[in-house]
Amino acid sequence: MKKLYILSYVFNLLSINIIGQGLNHNWFIGYNTIPDQYTVSGKGKIEIGSNSIAVLPQSRYMPMNNTQANISDSNGTILIYTNGCWIANTLGDTVINGNELNPGTLTDDWCIPSIGLPIPQAAILIDYPQKNNQYILFHLTGNYSNAQFPTELYYSLIDVSNDSVTLKNQIIINDKIGYVLSACKHANGRDWWITAFKDSSDYVYSIEVTAQGISTPVLQKLNTPNHNAFINQPTFSRDGKQFAFHYYYGTIPNNIYDEVRLFDFDRCTGQFSNYRSITIGPSNGGLGLAFSPNSKQLYFCTFDTVYQLQTDSTNLLTSLQVVAINDGFYSPIPPYQTNFWDMYLGANGKIYISSGSSVISMHYIDSPDVFGIGCNVQLHSLPLPCWTIRANVNHPNYYLGCDTTLGCGCATSYNDVAIDNYTLRIFPNPSNGNFNIGYKSISKSSLLSVINTNGVVVFSKYLPPWSNEQSINISNSADGIYFVKVESGGKYIAGKIVIQK
Image 1 (tube, rainbow, N blue to C red):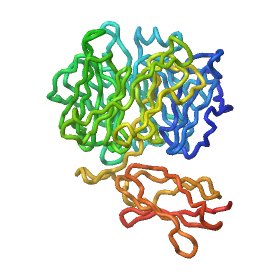
Image 2 (cartoon, rainbow, N blue to C red; image 1 turned 120 degrees about the vertical axis):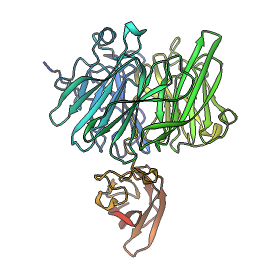
Image 3 (cartoon, rainbow, N blue to C red; image 1 turned 90 degrees about the vertical axis):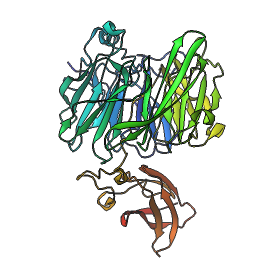
Image 4 (cartoon, rainbow, N blue to C red; image 1 turned 180 degrees about the vertical axis):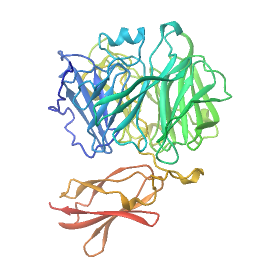
């Protein structure tokens, strides 16, 4: 029998108003059933909008360890999510046929007690191109017979209109592969690339997902030295043009080295090129990695240090800077230290850093587009309502648009210029002069204008590529009706806003 658990949104720790939501704006945390003396809830959720963040306690059933994938609708309402053991719907109930993911004894050890898989980026959810209400979950688990490394990559199909998994645990790769998965939108703006690394090698699998189905995986030799340990946080830059991963190797405690590998990525062909790397050490090892929103800075961390480098530098080593050192803080008491673990670029443009031990706070990088220490790393400054460990969520850039400069053109169902066919969202409306707009992500700068009824432009700015929400402030303007217009390539979308102070 299915069990129903209603999500609770009673308490907002940060008291920050949520603005427009989107496909990637939810992040579940926590694994306990009930709170204790240090927490207000056994589980929680982080909601990240384009200009906001709120941390909320929850009474959901599913615990979250290190594996997590979820996807929401354009309004930020959660549709489906998983911890690698089973799939839940918007109410936290198991979807039909959504149990028993990732068959194997390692899964049994972590899922039968309902803890959740401990593997970072072991699941990723994408929309099925041109198939309404259908989503594809790529997922994997470890295998004890292969030193706990995966030996299969699975996919499962979910139809949210029927609240069911229509195809489950289908093997797409049968090989020794790395722990982690990543995804990037095709340059046509509609299809997807899924990547998985062959374990301890210089090979990567690329899988193309189109409206016609899931392609046979293509194995590319990268012509790099073999990585001789599991890799972590393989990540595409927000513009989809670069790709990086982080791993460490050596012997504990005094002979550990961290390496970051950086590549160019062709969104048309799914091919990697222009390999370059940087190695630091000896260190105490590390895992985390994230690109800045503008794709010009790359961050990675050891367990006690956060580094930044410039992706366009001709010499990565000379651009390397230390931007934070762990201060040994315990959250809330020893031995729960807030070291550095995984990184996640949120929809608000900030990078969040989890810890390797159970803690009730999180670090974040406030201005990651800024070079040097001005990026402003805030240590253990985001309070959490529950205990969390190694928290991460594997969201690709769902809003990456078509890029006609790459030579493969836009998909016939995707028109990157004719944005007049897309409705502009303006909220709240009426407004006191502070409001937000949501629009289709596009791959070139667009002009936003706010115009009064006399035809006078009272506000304008160029919107950055691949954005999909902006906050506007015209509180100094008079009350009345204003027109909001977003223009790109001779096409435009427009709407009205009522200002009432």
